[in-house]
Image (tube, rainbow, N blue to C red; front, side, top):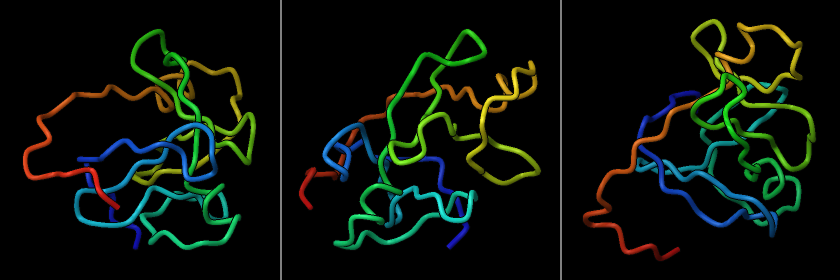
Length: 114
């Protein structure tokens, strides 16, 4: 599914490092063919790696930037009303497009179980 929900649960990275984002409506944020999707979790190493990223300070000087663990140097970016992974071209637009603000919301009804 390419539908991107704005509410996410932060999990420990399924690749054994970093973090993974699980959608409140089901599925995980995953890159595939350089585009970002909401996909179901599977037991394959490729799937676990595609679902995991590290977090850095936002390239725009605020927020945070997401770097996928199996594609070092490729950052989550919004462009053309979609999410992608791209390398940093050094532009101000890239910095803005790859910096995300996070708002913590109460986890009512979420038990954290898998």
